[in-house]
Length: 92
Image: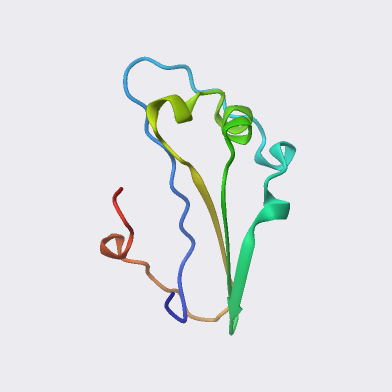
């Protein structure tokens, strides 16, 4: 992990004509399991959603498609903005 990062939230793109009715993420309750690391004024929290959390959050059975959603929260309290280039993110 680099010393500094920016906010990154990845939305899952779905194929075909699927209804996407996400629930409020706070209501799903996965944040309490997140692993966090803080360096300076930047804090990053990450958690992989379970199958039931994924259904609650997205109203879609992503596990059936072999998709494992990961929630990422970045809080930057530094006076400088930062960029996380897509090349450092595993496309799989």
